[in-house]
Amino acid sequence: MRQLDEEIGDLDAFIKDTEAMIVSELEESILDCESELRETFESLAELDCILSLATCAAESNFVRPMIIEHDIFIHIENGRHPLQELVLEDEFIPNNIDIDKNNRINIVTGPNFSGKSCYIRQVGLLVYMAQIGSFLPCEKAKLSVVKQIMARISSAETCSIPQSTFQIDLTEMATILRKSSPSSLVLIDEFGKG
Image (cartoon, rainbow, N blue to C red; front, side, top):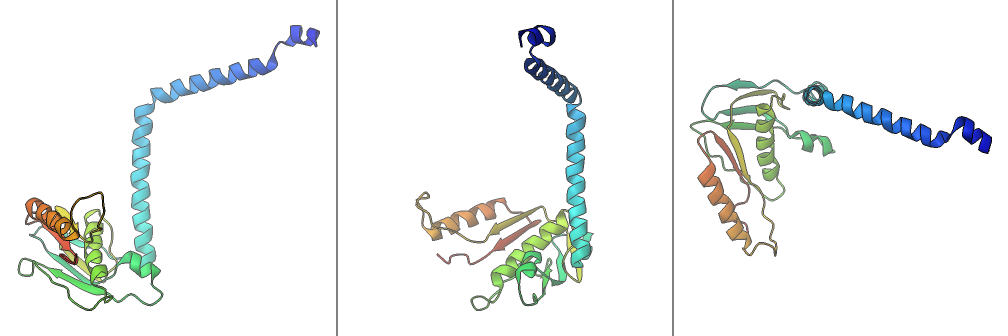
């Protein structure tokens, strides 16, 4: 063993030292190309998103929305909530969405569990999808660019906030009223329920 050790040396240490040197050289090579690698990864991530949207649109029979330069204008024929449609055992009942300068405020009423909240979420989701360049689950869509989507969908009472549910609702509504503009889409569900 002494003779082998004198002739060959400590092979285990030699192998570990060589591995560490190779890894160190590789790290230096990668760091030299860091900005190019980051740009490549960002481009691949964007391509992945575009391909995912395209695949979803093709498989689910989505249509291309027409984006117009106009004040707030949203016309969607037989729109469907894409996530609800996936989880329902029965067929999803499509809904129309019509918002323009003459119909800026829409009030949706109906009994409990009739789909009011789902409809409001559907409006927000479809408008958002169109804004990011996605095709939409509907028969036809024509809408303007929306600068911001603001929502007051539900409130949860908690001990960490020393306010009543109604006071939280009022605070959220005050923020929406202060920050919204004519090009905002504001969605409110069951305001003042608490």
